[in-house]
Image (cartoon, rainbow, N blue to C red; front, side):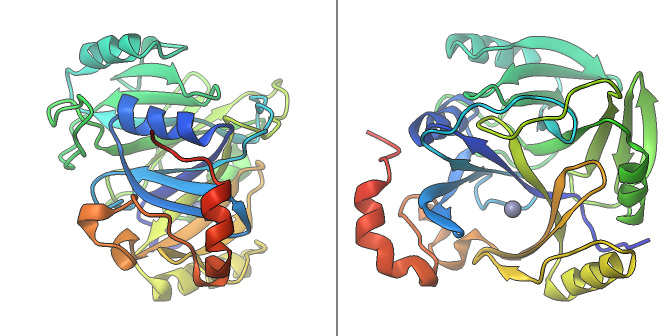
Length: 309
Ligand code: ZN
């Protein structure tokens, strides 16, 4: 078993419309856009990052908005629902707020004793706000005050046809089985960051998911630094996983590997962070390009859809 994983780092999904995506995460959910860059592997597509003030690992939802992407089909083999934490007692305020913005798919339930507000993102993405005691400092603005603001990720749900091998992998990654409710089993990294929960939901009869707008592309787990990341990479290789070399994503270093249930995992470093190339006061405002794509700046600035205005 390895002990270097802290919990979630970021979750990356696909979207159709960049402007709609930006408006939803900043105006409706009140997150801060902490980086406006491009997909390093397809630079004519944005890569947008939303989180807390600094884009602290465990708070960061990211998107690749492909302008003509077809909507994905939900099923097994993917991250089904991404959950953010909100303060205890604020569900009603969020229900009211989501209604004001005409957000779709809104309902309420309880999972493992926590009250959740369920809702859909602009492309049918599945989200929840989970009431929990979470002392992280929220980003505020756009009518979201500190007493209700989103604290960061609470958890992610993986929907699988069979959960056994993925559960074994999570346990290898330092997660411990916490509880079971119906077909959902909860895993937690003891001593991890505040986004240290993964739920595995098993649906043996469900169809395979088909990726598209509204689907999670991959889920990233946090490690402190590059030395810890190399230890994790070696341990995964020794266990038989096919892991990519370390890739420099400018704001973190990344390794990727496919998992038995079909979900793409990444392990990302907490360093250097999003203030690497712009100061904290102005994060997310300017279009930031990695050095290998800087020569495309003029073309990309005229091609990419403005996010505001
Ligand atoms: Zn990633």
